[in-house]
Length: 263
Image (cartoon, rainbow, N blue to C red; front, side):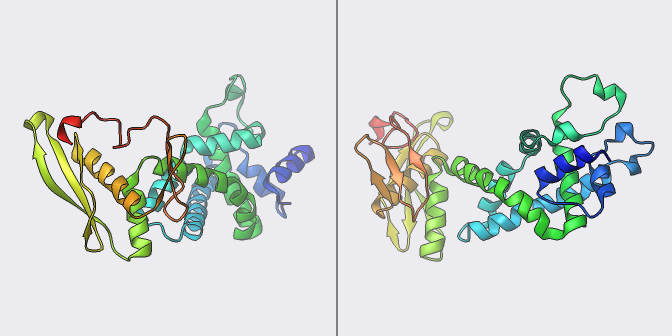
């Protein structure tokens, strides 16, 4: 293996390899190998599983109040193939992939190759340095992605925020009761209220069950004192609920629907 390539790869991965041949294999694409067994494909298979385990472990430890569904959603947002490719490209790992002559003529390698090399070097790290070497490499990269996924996954999802608060503070989930409905079947509006801990909170109308439930959840969050109304008109969840915000101009009743005739 070229010593300069080895040194550059080790600086990216924050690990000096005891077995340089393992690192070389992790960077070798099947297009240059005499046999697919002599490429990084098997390491890619192992690395995919290790990456998934590390991500799940990180989510589990960082968000102790999150339910299984919420953790699954964060994982899917944070570590898609597209995100893996983006990480590899930002680190420069894609420039170290050894490919066949046919692929060398391409201006841009497929993103799938970049994602694959991230997984193969993760496996190489694991085999050569153990799980701690993988954590040392991945965790600083994962935390910003998980934070972004949490913000994205919770934006305007007031039902999710209320669910998490209720589970954490009360040990049970809120329920949603349909109090009224009106309109034809193809354009029906619903009036829904949240019941939580024996109390029914203020009801809301919505042009769908989902919209009405979101509005009702936001009302419950407000009545529970879990929101902060700012001078600029924005509403923000308090830290004990969730770090999400309602942007300026967002309808006070939620989702900007005009249902004044139903008030």
